[in-house]
Image (tube, rainbow, N blue to C red; front, side):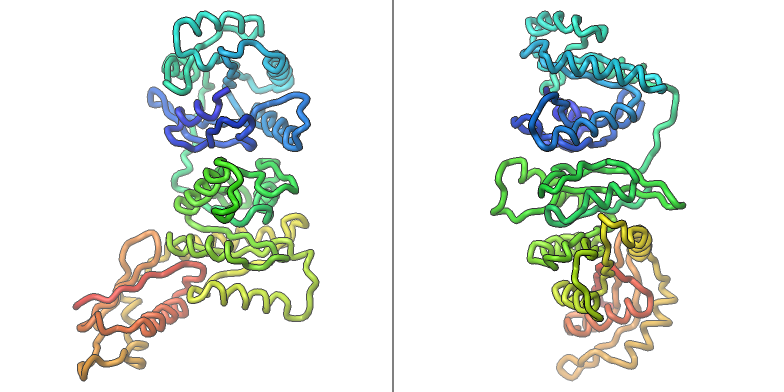
Length: 428
C-alpha cells in the first residue's frame, strides 16, 4: 500500500522500514510531523490482513486496533493500481465499527495511493463504493497530492496542544534478538506497545514511547535485536540493525539486555563498545534470571565475568531481572535515572581542584627524561558526557596508566557510575 513510504515523507526521515516484501511493518511506529506550523504525531501501523496464517497477524491486528484507539485522524490507504479488494472492504467495515465503539470523535480520510498520473486519479472513483466519503489521491513516492491531503488532516484535528518530548531523557533498550526487550517495554508501560512472540527478531523497527508514571518521565526506545552481519537473512535485517545503532546514537542511556542463560557473548560486547564509543550511559540488564540455577555467589560471579568483558570500562551497573516474572523492573527505571543524572553531572573547577590536586600531589606522574611532570589545574569541559582536562607542563609525557588512575579517582570521588569518561592533558 505504501503506508511506510508515506509515513517517512511526513516525518521527513527514513524512520519506518520500507521494503518491497509485504508485511515488513509489524509494530506501530511514532514520528513527529509539521504542516502549516502545526506539529502532530504520526503512527505507522502494520498492514491489517484478514484470514492469514502468519503467526504475527493476530498480534499485528491488535497493534492496529490500539493505534485506532489513540488516533484523532485515521488515514485509510488503498492502492489505486490494484483497485478495491476484499481486504479493503473488510478494513472499511472494521473502521466503521471502531468509530461506533469509540466515544472519542475521529475523522477517517480515504487516501488512494500511487495516483502518479491523471489517468490513475480517474481510476480512483471506484473507491467510493467503500462508503468512506471523498477519495483523496496522492503518490507517497513522488509527493503528489500530499499537500492538499495534509491541509485537510490539519483542519480535522481537535483543539489541543502537542507535547514536546525533546527535553526528556531517552533510554534505548538494546540487545541480541529474543533477549526480552519488548517484554520489558510492555511491562513498564502496562500495555502491548510492542508485539511479543517467542520468535527471535520480531521487533524490526525502533519504537519511541512516552513513559510518565510514578513521578518519572522519559522516552523509551525499543530496538530491533542486533545480529552479526553474516547472519542477515534479508535486506530488512540490515535496516533493523542500522535502526538499532541509530537508536544508540540518539539516546542518553543504553539498557543493554543479556540473556542470563547465554551470558555476555561477543555480540553483546560489540553493542557495549558501540555505546561506550558514543559516550552513552550504560546499564546491563541480565534478563531471565528466574530461569537460572543459583548458588550462594552466582550473581557475584556472573557480574564479575561481565565486568571482565567490559574492561577497562568496568564501572557499569549490572541488574538481574525477569521481564516475564516482573522481578526488579522498577530498579531498571531507578537505575536508568541515576546513570542519566551521572552523565549530566557538572563539577565546579573549585571542587575539582580541592579534591584532585591533593590526590595528584600524593601520587605524582612519572618524570620525563629527568624533568618533573607537574599538573596545575583540572576543569570539566561543557558537554553531554563527562570530559575533564588536566593542565600540565608536559602533556605528552603522561602515560595511559596514570590517565586511568585519574579516571578511577574521579569516579571514586564524584560517582560517574555507568558513564564513559574522557580525559585530556593540555599545556598550562
